[in-house]
Length: 212
Image 1 (cartoon, rainbow, N blue to C red):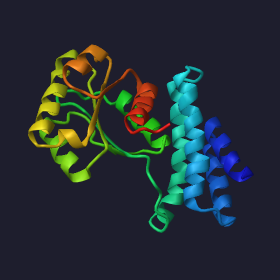
Image 2 (cartoon, rainbow, N blue to C red):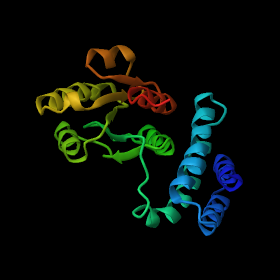
Image 3 (spheres, rainbow, N blue to C red):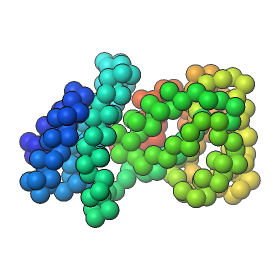
């Protein structure tokens, strides 16, 4: 449908006012919110994510497109309770205890949301016990941990051990990332995947859940 294609293209361009206007037009034409999200927003953000992965665009451009997506979601959100939208999976993430860096985590959240995942952001300085508590509460498919400091990387191991002790480890997939984190470290602490950067994190999440 041309209108949905136009929404995707406007989102790729980061034209928030146009994305919002086209979303309203689509609703006026009785297009279902789920179709606007899947064939418009997610399709557009998939292209944005791919361009970012190939380094054809930079972080600010991703953020502009993400904001454009949110202008559409503001229009659609009141209608979503009537039209259950199928999520690709639930991704819960937090920056570990002792670390207050959030730019990388926030970018991961935006790209995950754009790829169709339900995102639960625990924020920064999140202790192991809160990861356990929120995992019990939200039952995520994937738990992500971010650390930007070498001295806080150990927290990731402690969180995985706490999740294991709580009997939750086998029901979730665990991803880790952040500047000092490596594949070797991720393997050593028992994480399922290592995300080198935000774009790689989305690909690894899809891989974990068998999404092509």
